[in-house]
Length: 130
Image (tube, rainbow, N blue to C red; front, side):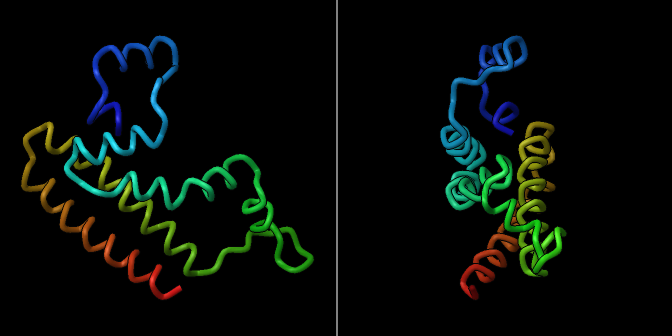
């Protein structure tokens, strides 16, 4: 999304040619929020970075999710599965929004904003219940 909404032509070329970006994920998430006029990606990055790294790099969270009692099998609650689906849905909506805006589909982008706000409120309510 950063490439679509924020990157300069030279940054895109460097990424294409060298497979390299000179920004951190934190810097990219802040830039995306600013460019899109939203407040989501930076907060999402802060709240999820530890867990995402632990799952990605075979950390304790990933290992802990592979055992149920004495069996090696996935171990996720219904609530955790729902949270992942909701976060994935919001991410997809936010990826589509700049594309729609760039192609003059402002009404569709506004609909995505409303849906995203609704899902964000539900996520916040879920967190408050924990």
